Image (cartoon, rainbow, N blue to C red):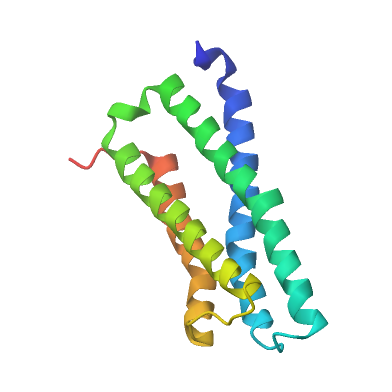
Length: 147
């Protein structure tokens, strides 16, 4: 049934993933700059608003659409039974957990506190989603059998 819509689902999935990844890559960078401002400053408040809007308007909907269209694609292609898909799905769950972690950092800022994470760690977090994306994309393109 879903296979009739395969290319539409695939295009929607790719677009949703692009939007989600953009947010996952941008939000840690916002945090790095956010830490430079005093809690009572106008800039601090603006960063809180930017982070909240990024999470609620772009990242959460694109995460949900990425999973929705990805799951429909998995049904259309019967990927659920393939080992590469299990690894890919595990990595996607890690990305979703990372998204949740970023959300908790944003909430910490919104409460008028600085998160207990170093600038160096934030810079690493800025790179982490792309590293996971490399593995996810290679799994999706090459579909290794792991034999």
